[in-house]
Length: 108
Image (cartoon, rainbow, N blue to C red; front, side, top):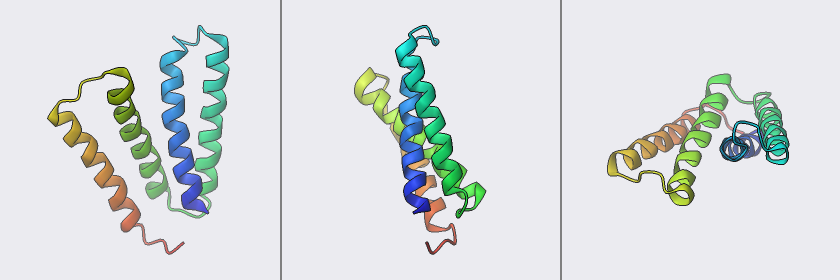
């Protein structure tokens, strides 16, 4: 269950990153409230995952999902640069996340 919490926490991190973009510096009240709620949910899910997973593994994967996911969605939905080096860097983040999972030593 800890891995599910962690993946959901990472997805929430992507959500609140987008929320920050669309809240326009917290000047849009509804978007701002939703963004803060998703932030809190992300942290709560991360905390639940950390009950069973090592700190370095959980935090590294959480930030990796958030960073890679946000960059990918920025490319797809916000027309951010999609040059080869950027794609390679995103793939390296994903490889790091997969590596942390594989070598975490967790059997759960």
